[in-house]
Image: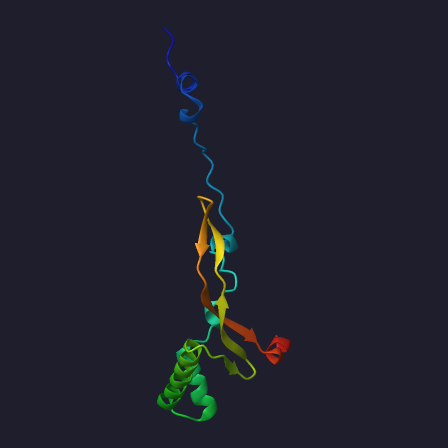
Amino acid sequence: MTPVTLLHLNRALPHTARMTKKSTKAPAKKPAAAAKAAPRKGAAPAETKIGKTQMVDIVADKAGLTKKQSEEAVSVMLESIVEAVRSGKSVGLPGLGTLSVRETAARTGVRPGTSERIQIPAGKKLAFKVASTLKGTL
């Protein structure tokens, strides 16, 4: 009688169930740049983003206000912009751009995976048009 080896067993199994020899080599290391997750397209790096707190500090320094006064001024300005946009008005910010609400038409879409046709209802979206003076300096 012949001894049964791994090779004999492997030949008897279907292709998908065959055992494979594990590599004895160490896995290749990925370069440091590839190991990090790629940032989303259009997303600003965390260190270049200015949040509300940083904006309050900037306003306090440039306007000579206390942090409490500048926090109130920034909050009131942001609340006013949000209120105007919610009511459907355009908000022009000189040197920066214009925020406005745009209507979107109803349309037919395709559901991913099933390729089923679906009806997407009409809606609204927020649009921002960059000022030409700012666009020219970028």
